Picture 1 (cartoon, one colour):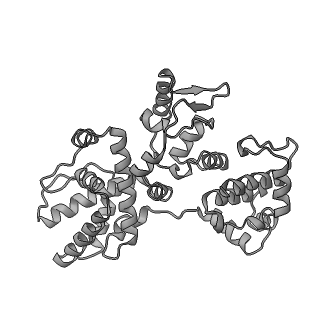
Picture 2 (cartoon, rainbow, N blue to C red; picture 1 turned 135 degrees about the horizontal axis):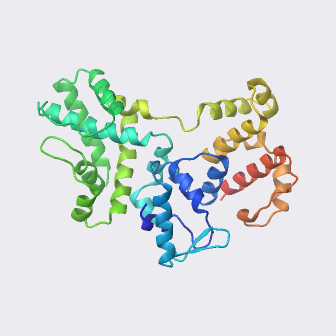
Picture 3 (cartoon, rainbow, N blue to C red; picture 1 turned 60 degrees about the horizontal axis):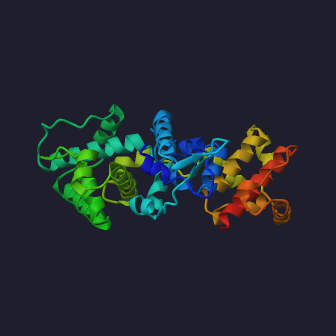
Length: 338
């Protein structure tokens, strides 16, 4: 991981645990990771770097420490020594595109996009003697299925290209150039990140973010398209909430108590609590039924006993699981008010 990206995920005023940031980037979805990612305002980065290795991440941390750009506190939390604005990250990688990584199977989406585009390019030029880009068998199977899902005659090819061009026109010109430059096709081998970095005079970590944004934007385009692009990536897109979480949320919205849900489904009450906390964190404020989980009087009672800074709230050591659930739900509700 590039240290320049990492330091922009840190704060000069809020100490942050490196393991939480790593687990957020790689897509670990425990309630604890999700909650602290929410508090760090990094929830939109969930699953953005699923292949990131701890050694690589820790190497970036150590480099920043050696350069005295971050301070390691006694409990291991990191505090940035640079008050960097995050608007640069949002320009390179808008939040709506970062959030796509919650539902994309990133590796297979990347491979299928590269091979699908290459196959389409050579089909248009009637060249079947090309060497395919190196991807997994799963990506190759999906591209073959895509081609079999329609006739791919001249009319269909024209529709696909026209839809793609319209989408490319919606991108910032630099993003469109980067997206097309990385693709392999007829008489174009595809550029590496280093080549694009030199050509555009941008650091590689920024090229990586632009490419990540492009991949998410392309997936969004495919999902919305009616000309055949949808079939390319649709098998590799999930729902925002897992099925068990969605099932629990649905029955709670219908008025069923958590205890009844646990009994009916043969699950531990703690599992039902985790489902609801996960949904509360991941969903917008107005899409979660907080009043069915913790009433206003309980929320106010919890808030009165706590400091103004939510990060400094302390739960009681003898709290029951239900009391902790209401405590954490109140923290989530209060965080999302701001």
